[in-house]
Length: 448
Image (cartoon, rainbow, N blue to C red; front, side):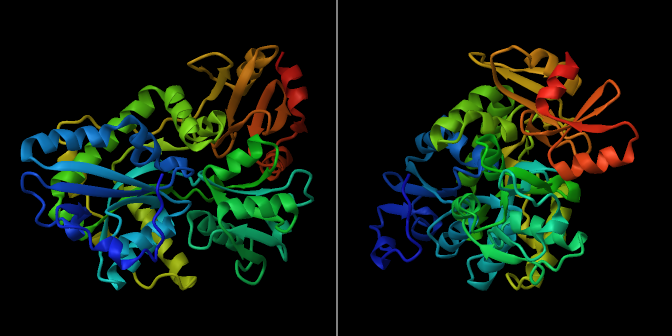
């Protein structure tokens, strides 16, 4: 997976006219014998973009669409997939005319829109990859055994996040709701996700606010405990696909090919979630169990390319947060969103349903499919004594899926309820007489 440095030599842009780098060098490349290279920026570790990145690349659907187009117009199309850790460098490359299509989270998308306009390389949001209507894709975590148990405990503490990311947006909003100044009430560390994860483990950060898949991976590996579930905000968060406006105008058919391929990848993920998770895990090095937590049949993310009104409304609510942080000025969201290419690419395709409530799910070792259950108790009964690869349960209040062995359990009469955070479990137990927090082992015993 090739990376291009933001300050790549100018000579890299002066390619022979026989080769087109997207729309910049390829305006006249629609003649026979020409070669057109479409450059796609993606984030392999941000697994809610896989239908426009990692999974799409591995399936080869975009290349297949382009091969069919090439047979018709006599052009040879190639795809240059460029992998990045966050959305910021993708935006930098897009505004330099070096990346044609990119995928990133909602906050970076707004920065993408703002930078594109400022640098006269306007971009457009053309589809969605993965989303969660309540905000469950972002989580604040602490080190195992940390004395920090709630947002109030973060006052004066060192909190790592990536400024300008959706995870930073979750942190800012959550702190404000808790009555903490997000700039003065904590010591914010602006770090890449991997750096922040290392800082948490080393003790140089007290907490980490990050986006998928970092919180789930750290929790799965026993390196973090969830402090705050982003779904408590009850505000949609999502990832989407952005394209350079110039490329979209010059290569409208190619953009439609990409969006058709994305729809096919989405269908594949939804119909074969275990296989898709295994594929993404192989490509990224992430544990398949973590990928499935987010991208599985009952995963935290819902995959659907449609530009749903509630997601666009949420995007507009994000603008003031970024403006207050002086990361953007005014952003015209309505002008940034362009549903026309997806409509053209989706002509005749059936619509995808809205997400249903998550259910408990069990993945046994050696199995290529999972079992779902109507209640956490039933899951625990089935898991006892079984060769379990992963067990997932939805938070009893927010619905966010989490690992059963990492969840905080509450027993109430014959009912067993799971929570992503201790604060959530404590709040529930405090409001229900007879409810008590129990260990995972005790919950398994009670279920039997």
